[in-house]
Image (tube, rainbow, N blue to C red; front, side, top):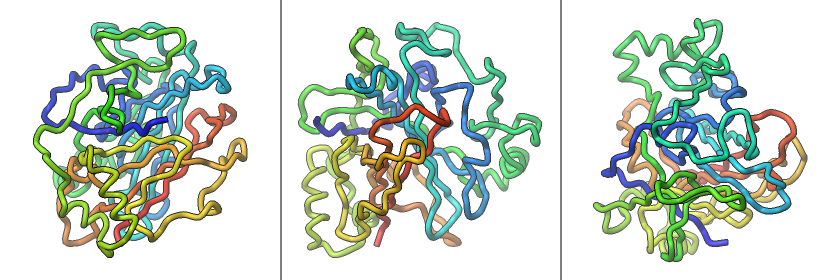
Length: 334
């Protein structure tokens, strides 16, 4: 299996409908486009374990699996990543996996069209927070997920102080071999679903204004010995597509940025639902920081990272919760 690379073209125009749930987007920022519309995680599951402030939605990746042994259980499958923007050390991350069969309560087996009626959680009685797009609570009139977001919505100073929603960008995907582009997304005006395929092509984009990787950004994410063999391998591996923000390589190994903070097998917890040892699925690259455009802060540590490696159940098990928690390992700046 070739490595799939995710890139962002910040100068492209994305129609708003293509970022909604029925088009199964892979994207950075904005509000989550939930896959299973009736069983969205509770607000308490999306709060930082340390500071109790709601987590910020970082990205989602549409990653169906069509291998025969899965028996169609992952016809639609999306992974969601959240993080705490407020904590300094030992930052909280949360990863959720959601999957559906081809026949489900929400989506037709035929590709959605731009003029089709939108489908939202509200159709199943689920209300979303008007600030962040996560599940609201009865306690806050089914309008907000928390007092924190209720206060932010009514106070401009708080809105300017806290990061709640990141800039939104579609993730375009291509093979690392420079051959035909392939996508984990499901939409393309010129392609159709087939009975034997979980995915369809979408128009590809690539950065037009980056001739090479921003060396300062890379060194910020790394910050160690430039003779580190992992760092040299990292730079060589990304040289063909230096602007990549995602590397998808399910069941293989991450591309680490340095020799430090590489996890041992016992550092990766087993799936809490089926007991299988989680395996690597994809990683978020430090190049993503360029597009988040987070403000500099003199009062707290900014959100920097080396590699964010996501580990998931290799069986993508169905039993238990509809949005299952998976695991993220942060290889942080040194």
